[in-house]
Image (cartoon, rainbow, N blue to C red; front, side, top):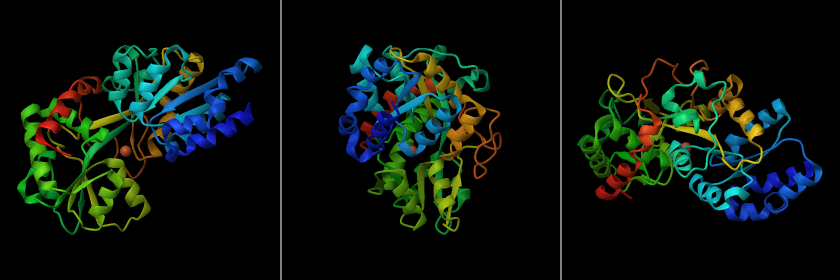
Amino acid sequence: MTNVMTRCRQPFAMKALGLVSAARACGIFIGVGLMTVTEIGAAERLVVYSGRGERFTRPIIEAFEASTGIETLSLVGQSGQLLTRIEEEGERTEADVFLTNYAGHLEQARLRGLLLPYRSQHASQIADIYRGPADAWSGASVRARTIIYNKNLADPAQLQSMMDLADPQWADRLGITVSSNASFIGGLAAMIQQRGFETTRAFLRGIKRNAGDRIYPKHTPLVSAVARGEVAVGLINQYYYYRAVAGNPDLPIGIIYPDQSTHGAPVTIAGLAILRHAKNPAAARKFLDFVLSIQGQKLFAEINYEFPVRRDVPAHPLLPMAGSIRLSPVSQTLQVETIDQAIELIRDVGLQ
Ligand SMILES: [Fe+2]
């Protein structure tokens, strides 16, 4: 079994292969895995379908294995594709747990009847706004939409609200990611909840005009563009800023959590759920408990400079202390309901 695991893991780590070929490369797991387990009457084994990158899931899985002795396999891919796959596999799926960087995918899974609700012993430590309806899924970390600026090119006093990014003074000086980015869409959905459709439309029009063609494929190149002064300001998830300054504290960049006296910074969450057709629901429950435990939360959040969902676990020391910043109080379930409106707005405004 250990050999199977080891041979299987390597291809999964090779994200470059893409989901389909990674799965094929790991025929042992996908094709023969079940037989192997049945044949040897294996001890508990867990399979996690993860929309979160290998470098972020691996340490969690290793700590879980060390703490429980449950062998754990992960299949890493794009969350949307994994969701489709879970649905197509139906009862045959080997997936016990679905892990994703965006609550929208968890809520979609719930609405399609793919989840097995579970109330973790740790649920009471986690605010309701970060948990799915009827314990269908749970947030694991919180990600804030923030403003990054170049200290030589922008005055933070002029950037206190998300709406400031739409101000004409930032024309040709703003950078954004492509609008298909799940956090971009989630942030807009939050803004619709916070401020309504029309204000969010005005925001989107403004940032489209200000960004022009300064639209970056991902957050990391956007942060680099701000750092080297190609753009003065950018709209990012907070952890990209901390990753950058952890690597090079001398970068001339700063971060602003917007709307601190009003709506709070929009947030999205990474989270997880147990699947209805899980072959090992008991192991899946242990995994969820582990991720939401104090140890798991520290690991899950710190690894990528995210905020823990647990109130009693401090964030990485580089991040502001809990309570010192205001994050949006809108429930993730409610926020997900405005995703379609956010996508409609993006289309309407004609953003790339
Ligand atoms: Fe990200």
